[in-house]
Length: 336
Ligand SMILES: [Zn+2]
Ligand SMILES: [Zn+2]
Image (cartoon, rainbow, N blue to C red; front, side, top):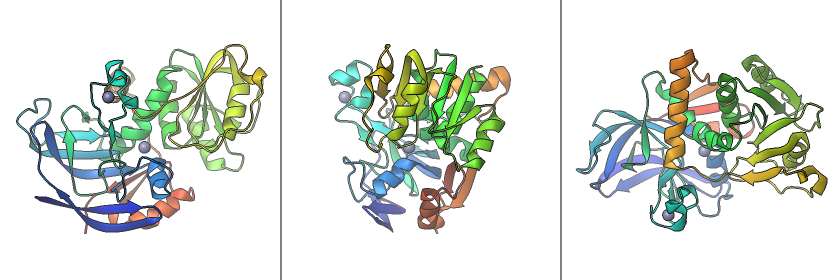
């Protein structure tokens, strides 16, 4: 039995406890967690807004750590290597969704920090094909937010990646990462930001985005829209700002109700869709893409980042909720 201390969550409640890890299987690795990023989904879990959560749960799905031990069938990594573990913990690899390359929709999928214990603890067991090796040019702090905000952001981006103009609604952790990916690929990026949020407007502008208010219907229509903010109201504006034949992707796991829409906003072959979860391929493709961008242009994703010690967990969650932190928040996982 391996003991791992961590932060458990039930609806509205956080407490420290011990996760007892039974054993490490032949197809699994044991990872010592070095850092774990905080995601809005962790807040939704704390607030009881993700219905398939298995409480009590240790949240956290943006995990960077080192392999301490590996099962005998694990050939894709060595002990001591640095790995990143993300939202998709496992999938059945056999159902109709998995067979169609949509394991993100698998009914038997497990999700890190939601249906199995996640990253706000000392150790975690991961399945052999469900982690990525982290390249040296991203340090732990930079790499952690990329494991969800980056990868799930990439899944949303994937559906609009062939367009040359992209609007981003909700410029948080995922928004500011994907804006940089799009800009590195020479796309025009329009950032739609809450009126009162001057700091975020400046951040977006300095990255090279054109900045607009999030409740604005603008003249300059764009092809693809990604809505990262959990605000249904934004669908109305995104549809009106999207060109004929364009696509609006809702990237969040949870969103407030979408208000009634006029058919004329959708008309002319606009597509409104959501993305859910991620596949192993998304994780690999995202890391390949940012590695390629680094090799070709020496461009690294610059993170607007706050780093905290894990014993500040509860305090930081409330600051994050109130928008009093930087866009990405990462915890160092030395439990005291
Ligand atoms: Zn996340
Ligand atoms: Zn499946």
